[in-house]
Length: 338
Image (cartoon, rainbow, N blue to C red; front, top):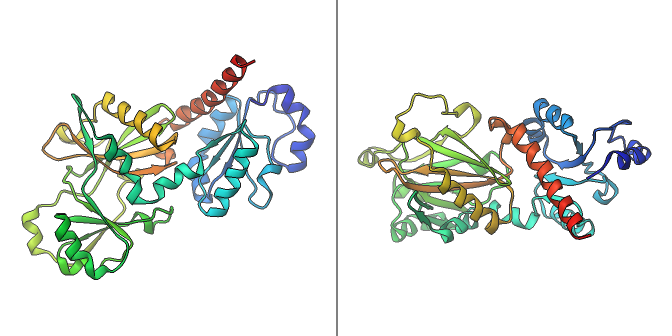
């Protein structure tokens, strides 16, 4: 924590950099952020920055043109940039500044940038209790040779596979979804891809936001159910529009209660706890669907690091409480060791 006196003593240094204002008597916590311009716009909304200042939190942009070690001091570094060079910079910074919390470790984030490894931990958990069962859809990874896709799909006994890019790099293209109706169309897909078996889910998904130990669930309209009897009447590749944006919110829609009912809280808490431990991440979201016609059969279809929290109702309160809790916990541990 940057206590009041510490901040005032560092005024000259901070103002040489032009990062911090001259008088910050309420300052408790400094969060350096390295985000894309798009992420800055969606995440650092006025309601977040205003509440953060009232709680003694200051967000400071990290200058990509200057060495990270020469900036700060920070209590927390918040980031969502890709690339090996940035990863090395952060790892070096973490090693030299263990007192700073980096959200999240670059090597842990990397796990979610590949759809082959992304869902492995969910499959390994094999979560099943009295509240329901959570698994992953059957999937197949194709790295090259699109002509071999029809045979591979047949051998894997995949029915109605949805094609997703293998690598998640933050671009719109990495979130494209395609459905190939027939074997000939499968050979027209562009590897590297993951083919994930489509599960009818009533056109609704549950976006489960994780912020530390906090969990917030929102409903989003999703892909419509597919009548497999109609498949023979279709051919070609259908590219779905992106559906899980804020405009697709289904929280206020008049839905069938059997479809709209949220997954049981205890089930989500168990899943979130296991994934936090296995992934080593504190900021992510899980896209979950419930198989249409069932009450307790759930599938995780995607996991995203540092998702669009700005679309989450009340995110400014949840996130600021999370940041303060992180540093307060670290401060208490330091006191207990003295």
